[in-house]
Image 1 (tube, rainbow, N blue to C red):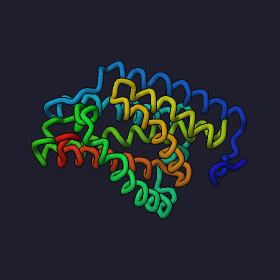
Image 2: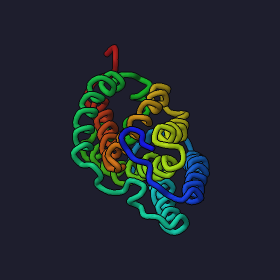
Image 3: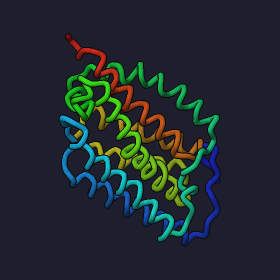
Image 4: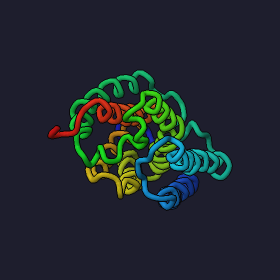
Length: 233
């Protein structure tokens, strides 16, 4: 059976069931635990954001990786860790990122709702060094774990049981719900974004390219906010 041009890997039915069940269970538990740490709010200085970044790295990165290796006893490469189809990934990121930067991120950056929370480190508005520290920390701790969990572990585990389209939609649900409490535009945008990132992960067989796209979107949004005045100024 094929969806989106990617073959569903042949595994014993019991193995597919076990992996899908574990993925669905963790898709409910880990985001809930992570969000219980407190609301996502901007702060003065990077240290106040490190608990958010480190908790994401542990809950969405390290724990799922350990689950794959020592409980499910499978390879991390089977969950999208690797280079994958580099040509297709580079092409997709090279096309989608500039389009998003101009058509979505630029107008969004001028909205007070968005500017009220981003950049998360308010020092980044005044200091290039603070801006770079913020983006490096997010790029190293937050985004890799996020993409591995949703577009790697959950997506690749479920596709073997419910197919590619079903898996893309299934992983979009918790990734969207995680955004509750953030700006309404971002919450709604998480739906098409989750679908697009999931599609890209399956097309390239890697979470690297959704990671680069997601990271680029975060950096460009912060950059627009730092450089441009709010709407109506």
